[in-house]
Image (cartoon, rainbow, N blue to C red):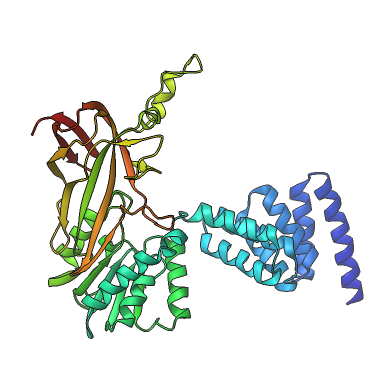
Length: 415
């Protein structure tokens, strides 16, 4: 035993010399000899992990850093190295789990907290926590779920996220909830949360898009209730319309209940020259910057950071008006045109359109995104008008709206 230990120490010394000289292949060969003698040796595995990092061999780095932590869970740096090796292999859930383990072993360590947050932000969009912190939204959906879900119902929840709405449905008495989440890391988190709350026998997480779900294979029969919370700030941008349409064509029984049962998209014209400059620049401080407009996406709506309450940066020129009402108790229109009468209340130049919506979640349960509160998850959206319009107070105007995977809005005089 002592001779083996001496031999391993000698090999480590030789390998370190090669490693310091940048002779990585020779260093790896020497450390592999040491590993054959002492497969659990912490230093040997650490050096082999570092060599694998340098050579871009993420699977080998994963293997060796995992061995380091198995030998000594207090090897702080190995958590970072293992998480990085996993992330490079697109094993995002495993990488996140490693850094969560590191947080448990080193409570209060700000560097670990920072890197875990960095990895999380690269893995998933950052709106999940603000969405779940919107208590008005949560309460409105739960009220609708309590009103529509009955004992014995099969529920299909599209867009699992954290699993919150699925758990509400299970608590409301559903026989079983089948919930779809196509983002692998989010699906894993949902399973963990559902299990933590003791509902894993009532909820099945399907790690796929709902368009890939098959009755008979993934769920025993068509669902009695559809829950869908797949709406962005202008209602349609997360694929809500085709997703709900497909559910009606393939996954729901006739007469199923939809939550929400419908929605209405609203708009208001505003004067706001700086929004136009977000999409089209000419000169800035005397310099011609017009080539930068190649990066503009003027037919994309944005978080307005504005509302119906005027600020020094914008004036609201029209009364609110309905653009489109959707019925989710049937297959919704995927493409539509609308002509909306607009009442002009102030004179000015219409530069952009504010957009928000109401969700009709269940009879008597409505949720509006037009409210200006700091905790609102859904903010009012804005889209610039490519053809700015001069408006006079009292003048009848019409908004022509077209949707075909994107919105195209035009304002014309008259009705």
